[in-house]
Image 1: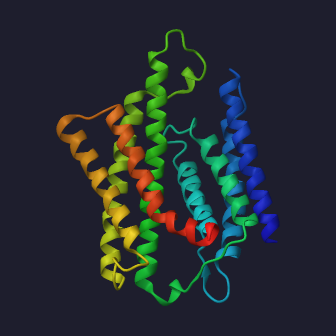
Image 2: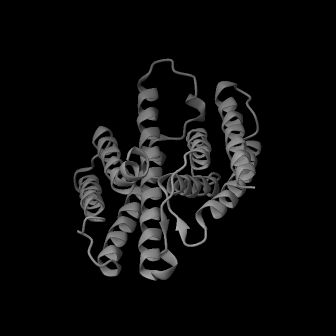
Image 3: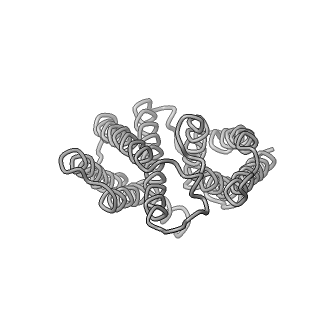
Length: 263
């Protein structure tokens, strides 16, 4: 049953990505509603798969592939929920493609990391906040890429491909900074929860995560202050958003990659 759910989710995500990509290639492309509907079915199959592979006896399997798949599910679900209110159509094929690959990775890469987070309510709070902070800032990263692409297209003379499908630059920029603010707040609270609920955030298990997450928080705070006080836009914003998400990715997945796959 696990395999069936995973294959179904990966296939549905891939189909949805292809449907939405057709909208950009052809002037009268497929129905956006069709693509979102297919992806919604993928989300349902995806969470059914995750519940089966994460909730194991005894404990929870929080391997790198399962966590990555969970992150992909959260991002995909959020992007679908806000698809009608926030311009993200050009980002959805990328998100769906990543979600499809993450499901297949969780299915076919044989790694395992059993935890017992149900015995530590504080750890549940910390992990949940960390996941939501990371997902919010990854979505901000996607909007930074979109802003960079829109800026590039606006500078191209006679550019027509995708141009009509692109949202206004100022709208994307506004959404980006709202996401950065929300993600930075969540990251701050998640770090604080770690110091409150975990015994030692600087022990061998958590030290690199604490240092890298704190460095990412500093990057995001500098970015937000720079935008507020000095009106930072364009390249500075994109560079610091990318730097922040790289630091967080290393914090959340770096040690897991080494411990569970490379060693």
